[in-house]
Image 1 (cartoon, rainbow, N blue to C red):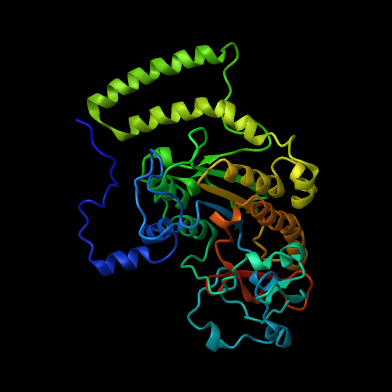
Image 2: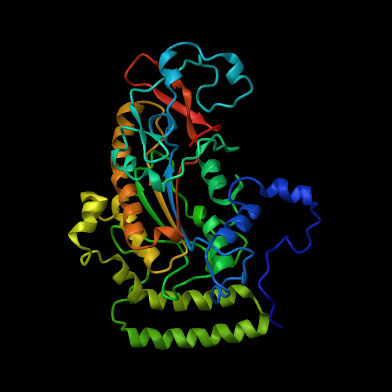
Length: 409
């Protein structure tokens, strides 16, 4: 007997409406998925793998490009000017503002107000203030909405990233991209609906494959990492001595065995295995074409910057994100590490902003000129922000900022 796909734990749930809303109201969890699904693309039919067939309102977006800044970038050096901090620089932070608030590495230390050397200017028609570290982003702010009231329940990196990706601090839940793949399906049968790309230095906060997990959903919805440099996807190429025709015959034989087993036991993971084998075979052609940037004109590299010519950089990944968006990939996840600035924040912010400023602005421009920005949601964030208090001597040149759960950008 064949069994329809199910989500364990939901069928026999005894949650009240209030309990459900409390569990799903924060992060990218259950309720977040329903809200995102209404905003994301599709028509009456959204493909063979998606479970959602109709929408209550006409959808506006078809895909998400999630630019995740791992480590927690400082809002005070990027998008959130606080001129009063400069006036009070070096003075004690009033206890009325910090009482009961959690800090990571500042526990037991004097809490001293920290300003910034950055200069902010009003940009675009809305006059959004942006730091001088982001000169390229300043020119595209009419395409950007800045949310300065972000909050999280996590004070440390791994639970913070997990919470931002899944809506829960503990591992095991589906990531946002997996939910969208499950709900909306794929627009391209030759590429996964959910793909992840990495760049930057880890600073001991490793990016884990479970950040793009499918959790309890069928594993067909799990994200696939596109590696660079090197082999883009492990084990995609034919082994030595095997041609495509031979591999096709082997795949057909394995498919018959899996299909027979599926008809016997009805395990949906067997159907997933069949689909993944077929996807891997088609990706032998689609992935090399996707990652070949040699046909991109000079004007495109001028948009993203010279680093876009170097595989594995954030700029190159932004260009690949546009190519993935063109090819119908539903959720494109970019992780850029290097933002955990507990010390040396002034110099290190200059370094990291230089790596991401032009590629982010170039991505927005490129999507817009190709007509893709109107139905693509581009998100830029980290797992949390940084404190308005100094970590280290606020009067030295080597100070930093600790983790901040409240009111980041």
